[in-house]
Length: 198
Image (tube, rainbow, N blue to C red):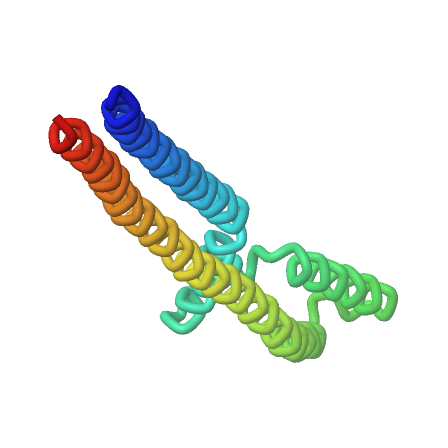
């Protein structure tokens, strides 16, 4: 008879300990999921910050912003670009020295030759400048697309971690209920046996 009471108490204690273990397992899973979410967010924030200079360049004057200025008739970015300025200065220098050596520096022919040369130079360099701006815009677009894809991946991974937290909570509640059910069933059987034999 005392064995039945001891068995009932042991069943109740076992149910309590199983309940605690299920709660600890649930807490551990929740903490692991929260840590995974925090790391995903940290990685996303760092990657976004790393890509920001490229996105900024691509949307700024070195890319899309420069192309928009050209399309609106603002050629100041082109005219002040180092490549064009250097080539223009070198052409004028060469034309001046050539005309001066021939005594034609102030002639109408010199002015016409210089204008034709500068027009050709501007046309050629403008194409190169547009190409460089398009490259910059593409760089920014690719960086922005990469950040967008990273954001989608991060959202998927974080939602998966939240799903794991939910599953851990549900499993923990189920396991706790089973632990108490098993413990109380054992207690009931032990008490029935104890009192039934009296």
